[in-house]
Amino acid sequence: MPIATIPPLRLFHPEDATTVARLNDMASGGVLFNIWTKATGEDGDPWEQGRLQQIDQVNSGWVVIVLDQGNGVEAVLMGQPHTKEPVSTEGVDPIWVPLMELENLVPGSWCINVIATLPEYRGKGHAAMLVKQAEALARDGRHASLALVVADENVGAIRLYHNCGFSQVARRPMVKGDWDGPGGDWILMLKPLQDN
Image (tube, rainbow, N blue to C red; front, side):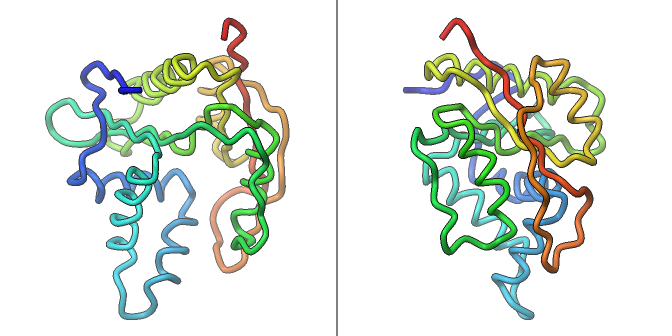
């Protein structure tokens, strides 16, 4: 099904990948840069690894929508429908296991994986606009709910999501390993879409 967007929202273009990688890493609290650094080794370029990952995710079916008012990407929404069956965590890097466990609690939901805005564009309503876009995608796909996972320290995002109709339904302790990012728990938030 084609995805409809209204400016300033538009679908991801490959040339957006560098900025989207930065936004994706910001949303993860730096965990992605940690993973990209390990993947590329001492002589590699973790940001190039991140750039390529954004393109791979789009090619594998992720929905990536950017907010662009004519001067490049200011904010991004990344997401996808969650499978109806639980996803196995066997063999997965332990850092991802709590996130996967939380998403497995909401089978069939449309999951927001990333909403992030560049610091210089915050406070302009970009995130709320992207949440509305995600809700439209979930409703178009006839999903019963919209779900996301957020770090417990990200109180501004949690407040935004509460204001958009999400409620906390579960939480899991973060697994940090050699990542020293902020927060102690991942929080699963859910917005039921009753009329689907």
